[in-house]
Image (tube, rainbow, N blue to C red; front, side, top):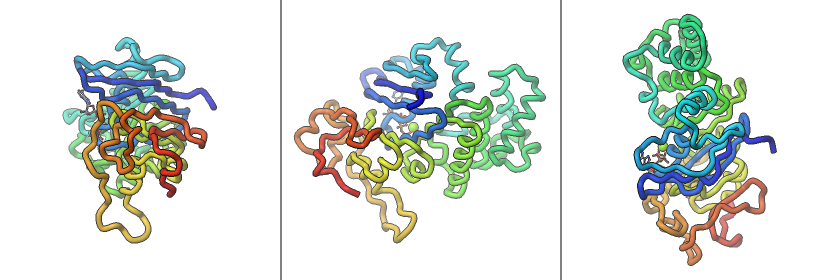
Length: 321
Ligand SMILES: Nc1ncnc2c1ncn2[C@@H]1O[C@H](COP(=O)(O)OP(=O)(O)OP(=O)(O)O)[C@@H](O)[C@H]1O
Ligand SMILES: [Mg+2]
């Protein structure tokens, strides 16, 4: 296995007495796409904000290891972290409007981003902004470069945000729900764009989403989170063909089928999400709960190399799909 680009080990994030992430570990190789799934509140965003050193809430406590290109990021000084952020690791935030300032033109904002990391003239930065807008599929980029964010449609704004993230050719792009607010057609175009970027720039991508359909389209590796922990991890093929964890079964059951008759209603996983103090975080909602679940199951390798899950169920009670 080649040297991982990013390796997160035993990441723990607490806000006061609330544990948002409880011992998360994963690795990502150069050019790989990791899909991070799990429902609202499972700790997807805060984990990735921690990678970027962006957890700044007073009382927040982050521990573990975040090793990027062989270098420990956790505990880096602000100034050092700023040179990593944007240049080596870029993030597309969950809400594209927060990434764009309404009072400046889109092109100016992309150019500023470039100039924050590189010594180039304003003219050269603007030219690069035009090329980037073209690359992400904005029509008439020479004209659009001078438009304000409110003059863009939602899909175009998301493309502009992606252009900004790509402006420094990052080795790692973290995209937090980049398609959630978009209609299905635009969503498909953005996914296409991400695939192309990975092919053309060799960037690794962490794609956060609650949509298993998106994961199945783009991810090489899949990380399923629940209640601040990884409950399953593996190659896309493993997670989709031989899912191990009852929460993953539920996620897959709620993916609308593309072919064949559609279920009239999507089956919902009963109960509300929430982490138990002790024990398996999913236990309260799990149809397969039994006595051992009062202790938290560790993430454990399965028989299939690279595939791990955190569940006590014996083999004969695992579902076969
Ligand atoms: N700054 C903060 N202060 C206190 N609690 C926080 C803070 N940021 C996140 N949390 C809590 O941490 C947990 C994980 O939040 P996170 O934003 O990572 O969820 P998520 O998996 O990204 O959910 P979503 O799919 O809704 O975006 C939540 O319970 C959230 O309320
Ligand atoms: Mg989030």
